Length: 247
Ligand SMILES: Nc1ncnc2c1ncn2[C@@H]1O[C@H](COP(=O)(O)OP(=O)(O)O)[C@@H](O)[C@H]1O
Ligand SMILES: [Mg+2]
Image (cartoon, rainbow, N blue to C red):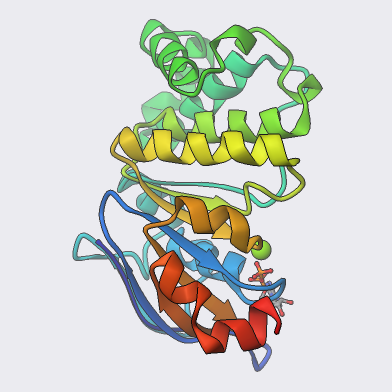
C-alpha cells in the first residue's frame, strides 16, 4: 500500500500540491488525473524522492519514502517513466533495456563500477528477452529504439521499467502524443504489467484512457484533490464535471 498523507509542495509560495491524501492499493491500477499544471508530475517527483515535500508524508508498505534518496526509493522496487521519451539514441531496443538494468545495479554497489563490461551479461539478456516477450516487443529487440514510431518508443520505456522486477511503477502521461491505436495498445500493456504483479500508478491528462483501465482514480485540480473513486464515481462527480470535464 502506498499512503500519501497531507502532502503539500510549495514552489516560491505557489502551492503545486496542496494537502493531498490518498492510497494506492497493492496490485491495483490507480490513476492520477488533472489538467496541465495540476501538480501530477510534482507528486511523482515526491514519491520517487526527486523532490522533498513541504509538508506531509508518503509511505510504501509502512516504510517512509519521504526523506529517502531516489536510489534508496528505487531500491524498494519503485520505478518510473518520464513525461517525455528518454531513450538512448543509436542503441537497439535490447541495449536500451540492458542500460537501464546496468544503471540500477550501479546504484546498488560500488563494485558495479566494473559493470559497463557486463552490459550484455546472461541474466540481463534473459530478462530483456522475457520483458520484450511480455509486452509483445520481441521482434523489435535489435531495432534502433529511437527510429521506432513514437508510441512504440513509449512502450520500450515501459519495458525498461519492468527490467528490475519493480513492485511499483509510476507512468507519467504515457498516452501523451499517442494515436488511438497506440493508446489501445498502452491500455493492454498497463494491464499486462499489473498482471506481472506490479502496482501501477498512472498519471494522465486524458480522462478517456484512464476510465477503461483504472481500479481507482484520483482527480487533482490546482494542486488539490477534488475527487476520488471508481471510474463511474469520478465520471459522475459534480466537482469533476464542473472543474475538469466541462459542462
Ligand atoms: N521546479 C519547479 N519550480 C517551480 N514551479 C514548479 C516546478 N515544478 C512544477 N512547478 C509548478 O507546479 C505546478 C504543477 O506542475 P506539474 O507538477 O508539472 O503539473 P502537471 O504534471 O500536472 O502538468 C505548475 O504550476 C508548475 O509551473
Ligand atoms: Mg506533468
